[in-house]
Structures are given as structure tokens and as C-alpha cells.
Image (cartoon, rainbow, N blue to C red; front, side, top):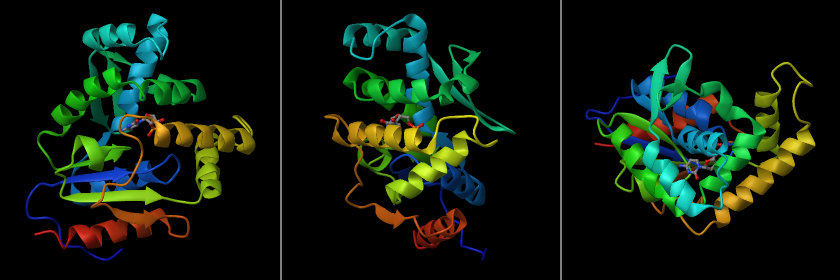
Length: 230
Ligand code: DC
């Protein structure tokens, strides 16, 4: 990878897009190259989903969700293995990646009370800037003033294959490719059609299709763009 000019001031970089487009790998790599922090906002929605599940609250019960948001605190802590998610001080990192919590996270993320709660959390976490924020509405709602906005997409079949490989590192241990693809399409449809903050590119976002690019090439393209920012 060639050398790129690093920004002379701390920026907010946003990376939005559907599941399996490569956002997480790209965001982590880009944050490392820039010496920035990585903010995984999907993990926060997953954290609310775990809290709701623990409390036996349904994703349709807005008053209960609102009360729940009033009594939880989510923290993202960077360590050598990546980010750890704390729910009221308890480490729930391992609990948030199951297919059940993925669906629940998508469901709670459609509720305005949850989005309003996490809006403040996300802005607090990004306050010092020098951050790469990954999610669905980073460039549109949470950080509309971000200096560099990217929207990363890929063919649905390629996204499903990537997600499948992520979930099945030891092959055959998890759900089938067909299940992963159909759950992913279902979740995409919900995320893109919900009334609040649906998944869509910001008008000023740079769109990158990662179908035929390696994720390192995607990062290079982003760094090239960031180098043009004064
Ligand atoms: O990126 P992820 O798969 O960990 O996100 C989990 C869910 O949270 C996803 O279905 C959509 C939702 N989400 C969101 O609505 N807004 C964000 N900024 C991040 C995630």
C-alpha cells in the first residue's frame, strides 16, 4: 500500500452501508492507518437488544424501551482484541453477535426512542473527533457535519458470502449460506424501509462498491479521498 498524506486536523469519518459490505473490516483498517478511534455503532444497537432481551421487553413496546434506555449505560472500550461492549459495566461483547440478537437489534433500531437515546451516546463517544464511525445513519443523521463520508455497498450475494464466512470460521458450525442470505435480505429490507433514519447514502457521501475490490483497495480509495481534505 502506498503512503498517503494524513489529515492535518482531527476529522470525523463516517462509513455507512448494508450488512456484509465490508464496513467493519474497512473501518478498523482505516482507523488504524489514520491513528483514529473506531466507533462501532451497530454494537450499541446490539447492546440495547441484549438489555431488552434480559429484561424480557419486546421490540414493539416503546414505553418499556424508553424506561429501559433511561437505566442503561453502554460503553465501548478499545483493547488488543478490538472493541469490548459494556452494559452497565458488565462485558456483553460475546453475547451481541448471535443471529437472534442481530434480528432484535434491527427491530429495536426501528424505534425512535432507541435511536434518540443512542444519538446522544454516539455523539458523546465521538466528541474528541479523530474517529471512524461505522453504521447506517452516520453521514445522514448522527454526524451530518462529518468531513469525510463514505457509503460502502456490494452485491447481495457477495455480502451474504462474506457474512457466512465470518459466522462460520471453522466451516459448517453455524447457519447455512441460504439462511444467512435470507436473514440478511430481511434485515436489509427492514433497515432500508423503516420510518426513522433508514439506511441511505448521505447526499455528500462517496459511494464505493466493494464487490470487485479487496477491502485493502477500498481503504486505499478512502485514504486517497481523505488526503484531499484541507
Ligand atoms: O452493523 P450491525 O449489523 O452490527 O448493526 C446491527 C443493527 O443495528 C442493524 O440491523 C441496523 C442497526 N443499526 C442502525 O440502525 N443504525 C446504526 N448506526 C447502526 C446499526
